[in-house]
Image: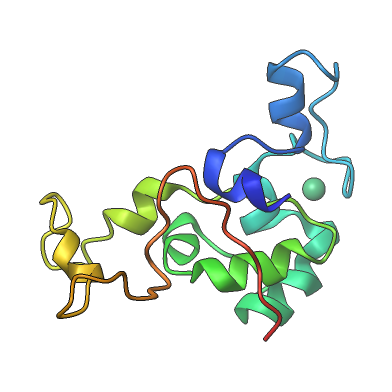
Length: 133
Ligand SMILES: [Zn+2]
C-alpha cells in the first residue's frame, strides 16, 4: 500500500485495469466512477467522511491535494484506501521550495553533511512508511 505512494503503482482499479489484472476500473467503494487516485483523494462520495477526518474537507480539488503532507496521506491510506502521491508535486512545489528546479541537496543536510529528516524528502527507491500520530 505505502509503496504505491512512491511509485504511483498501487491497487486502485484503474491502475489494475491498465496492467491487465482487472477488466473494470470502476470504484469499489462508490461504483460511480473510475477508481483513480484523483477520484479517491478528491471526490469519491463513499469515503467523503474519511477525507473530512484527515484533510478537513470532504471534497478536495487537485491544488488541495498538492498541499497535503505525505504523512497525512499515509494515515488516510491506512483507512483501507490506497493513495498515490505525485513525487513531482512534492518535490517541485513552488509554494514550498524557493527554487525547486535546482538540485540543492544541502537543503536536506546538516552542517556535517548528514541527512536531516524532512517530511518533503521522498527519495526514489525508498519506502515511505507511515507512522501513527
Ligand atoms: Zn468512488
